[in-house]
Length: 70
Image 1: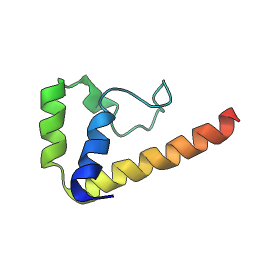
Image 2: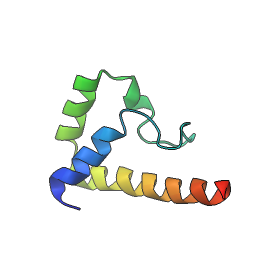
Image 3: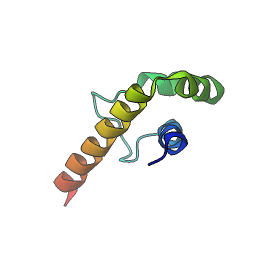
């Protein structure tokens, strides 16, 4: 995934949890309370290692939760 693609992926998470309900340890939960404009600016300023960490957290969470639903 390219640099800007990672930020875009993270920006899409502002819409809501892909699983419908956030996990208790969701690193984006509190940020979803921001306006969309504030959140986009926040993501644009975020260090790439933090962006990557949040994306990895979500990938792991999605895989775990999808396996439970099967």
